[in-house]
Amino acid sequence: GALTSAPSLLANLYLAARGQHGYELEGLEQPTAYLALSSIGLRIGCDTRLCRLATLAATAGNVVWLCALVLGSRRFARRAKAVADEHDRLAVTIRDYAVEIRGFHEDLDLEAVEQGVQEALRARAEMDAAGLRARTRRSRAQEAELSRLEAFLEAEAWRVHDVVATHANGALLKAGLRKAPLEKEVSLLLTREKR
Image 1 (tube, rainbow, N blue to C red):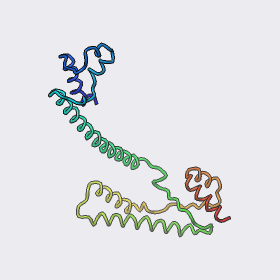
Image 2: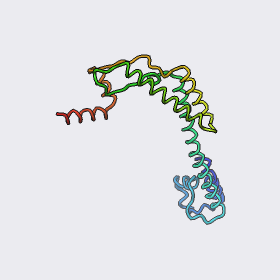
Image 3: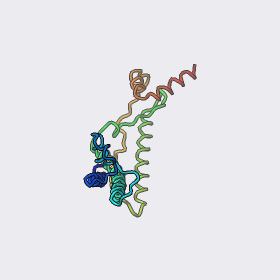
Image 4: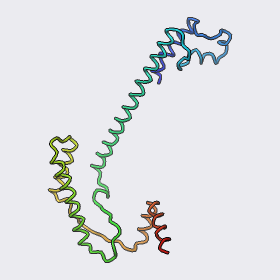
């Protein structure tokens, strides 16, 4: 901001020093006149070459500043996403190894769920890896993703190690509903509909 306003400020101070500021001398006796003489704003109705050059330079500076701000914001967003992705890659959270599936009946066959989830995870990883292998040209990010998928398949990381079924767990349901207000609202509407 200060750099883009420097041409206007310098022009105003230069014109004030030469007495060519365009203000009545009586009006300059007030302390507020110093704000007018040192204004960093652009003048309206410029009629001197210096004033027009200062306005042009300040406007060009503002355009450059705006472009730098937009490009810098986009670069910052990419950097923030890269840092978040790296943190997600390095930090182990429940999201990395747990899956929640809802809507099953109480007579659930846990082995069937385990087999179904394993098959779905393996098939998805194989499909994604095959899609990346089929590309003739891959970016570095795609190469890294292909390596990650191949390691995932080779280590059989798609295997399910445990299946836990929770039924009629009121405390767990209440905690989940507190975390998801929209789901709570849908659940209440469905309950009312059944009555």
